[in-house]
Image (tube, rainbow, N blue to C red; front, side, top):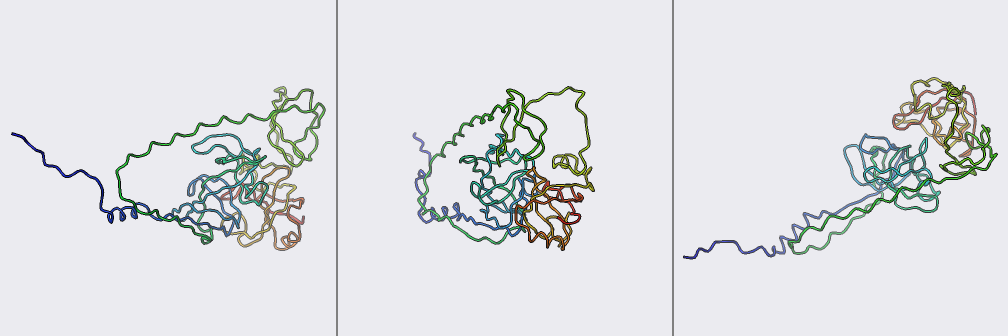
Length: 345
């Protein structure tokens, strides 16, 4: 006796109409849009997570995703290569390595789009001269964005009959490039050594002083060297009156609230305080400045309306001497100190 098992005919091909319906269901139309920032906005690694920097008002970026009151955007820009160090974390290849952070620009030496904080991780895409092309997808408050200015749609491919095919093999990750070696140099014997560009000399270079080149700009080179002094010659000392640095304020912020400072600042712009900067009087004018020079950080300066009128006549990047009091060591979103200006510039 022969037993024949009953079975369904082998699966070969689905009806064309059903295949088309499945293809449309599985391949929704992808939409991407660009958004323009109505105001300066902080950007984070995750919604409300680690703060990475601030995007300038007027910057237009590609929107990627939304989550509640947060929007994810693709921040792609150019940065000084000397301001980066090789530091791998997940998909990222580099991080900002400059006290006070560094500007992100639309093109090499182009318009400033944003500023990334020190230690912010980025992915380097390419290098051009002394500039690096970097990218990171970040999260910003929805309230800081304008409506989408451009929308592009990816057309759906024509439906094809469904076939059973094995999945493609997983991609092989590229080999990690070796970290770039530090640039080394030898300082000319007798060359004057200063604490910053244009500041007073603190000594002269001895013979055969080997150093690491950290950055270059404005006719100056920042160097790092291993130097030694006797243990008894080093002791803690309070900062000179009015000469606090950003590092000192960031390290112990509460200590310096109410401290008086005399800083050389570089005027950038004037704006009106809003809810993103509650440390400043709401609706009152304030200055965005760079400094204290020769540092490359930022300082917010609260001014009266009368003082603001004097600054409106000032040219961007013009320097001035500011005597003021620290009213906040940082803002809610950025490690930028806030001072109240005393007197006139």
